[in-house]
Length: 389
Image 1 (tube, rainbow, N blue to C red):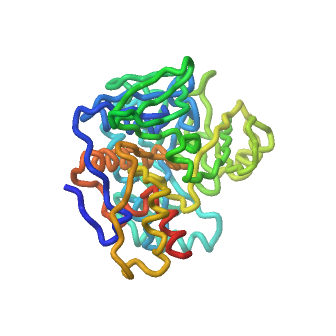
Image 2 (image 1 turned 180 degrees about the vertical axis):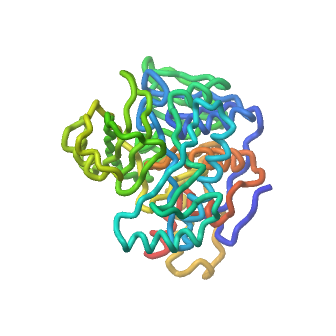
Image 3 (image 1 turned 30 degrees about the horizontal axis):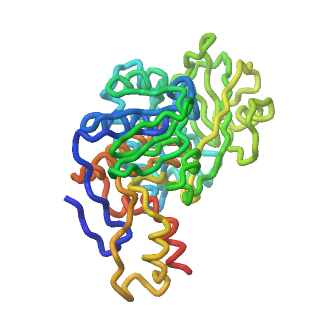
């Protein structure tokens, strides 16, 4: 059942009836994982603007499960630890060619970070992290084959490819109409989940949300060194992984906030320079570049989509304090949700986010505590702004 909070701006919306028709916009890891979870309870149509699923930032030859670690007790630490453990449990249920549990070793950059690693090893369970002579080892980490994962996840729902949703509008019967190209076709559904990364801003209902567009390049490397696990420091290096024309170690990744769209040698050299293991004599076979969407607080946006104009009106006095008067409950677009801004840890967070949003939509027990739910809430940025006005 829905909980009412002392912070009514975080109150959840009404539940959606099982069996309802739901459209998911976006065929990356966020949309595919969401569709897989929701398809157990709803009739799902996934809409992807490109010619195949996993064609954007989710389409690298390998996606590593790189745990976020921290000494503090922040919301970020709690969320990402839960997400990592949740992801490992989920991926271990899949066919063995989807998830390769080879382990991940984080190497310290200097003595200061080594001291930090020593403290970190005392804060995490040994099932997650183990201290070694080299650094911090995560035995349950590994890498995922996105192409095979996409094929596995997309078995239980309808997928429309080469279809770009340009507008979401209400029907006169309380449903949602999605207008998508080519042909200005219309799809009528009971609910919509926006999962198309930074492109979520094209919709009128979600354009108040701001995402940083961060371009990232990975490099395919041929090296004589035998790499049997993932190594991480400033950058990362994977074991040999199948690419289009054979096998390569993957080295990455850049975080470019400028308007770089093409694969370039400068970024290749950056990847080689920050590799955890020296790669000076290695050969560059190629690479890949795509854009990730990130938030300024480094947490995803996941939940029911607020009516931002109503939030502005309802909570304009929050700067006087949350208890100075009784505030009305949250106002949402009925049957409209979002999961975006997963950044570079989309494969790590997508299983937990999908389970959480499914439980929110169905109004059943949540896999995360309310404190984390609030930290993921799409209105959190507006609430913070109104509180400091």
